[in-house]
Image (cartoon, rainbow, N blue to C red; front, side, top):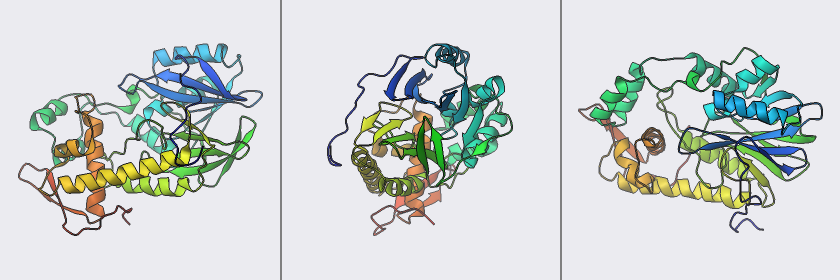
Length: 356
């Protein structure tokens, strides 16, 4: 296939939760459940001979730990998991990294940012939302009734779904090479969905382990949070896509953190890039009259945003507005309620670039 053709899915059906499919010699595809609309995460186990390397872990829960015990006994042939490699710091990917280290002595390999973010957020337990979080929601234009309800409730904490992460990890970084599954892999770093997101490009075969940096059927969530309210993940993600795309080949088998493995990486990369440029252009048109972030859902999403999706939609809306603002395609002012109102700048640059 060439870079203009649609994607191909060599395995149209995923493995059952807690089971594995061998997708290349010594590489197993495992799927674990998630308690959300996106109801699964993909894990990859690579046979190192005397043990296994796994890429990501799933969320930390009694159910997931039970599935892993069954997997180790059955699918992994009783051989130990000796190394856990993390693509990024989100809880559905790091949830059991600490468990594997504490209970089984596995090493944790991760980028410095991923490990520090995961450990910091797991230790940062809040009984109520912080004042900074409430201020962030207010500036995004959260409805006062919703804001009041959230202010009185316990927020999501990483520690709810991430096993405590002990001290000690092995750092991986851009340009490193790593051996796993009897193959040599180049480490290339993405950004946007998560800071310093690791991807792995096999030298011996056309295989890429992409984590959530590149996914087939959905666009990775690009969100801004109270931890860094002026961040530009959209710009960072577009820069990473353009940079990583130079390595992509139509024959690459892409093993992503969600959905199905696929072929057609150049096509998918270009599709993702163009989709976000189009979204930014739609948003710029939509804010010809001033609007806050929560007003902008119709311009960015092709479906009605329900309660379960509201939080992710809000942070993604802020991310796209931040990009327009930092690229000088929009201006913003605080209204009387404390929300930022964004308005497009007439004659602003009609393309998106990473802010410097």
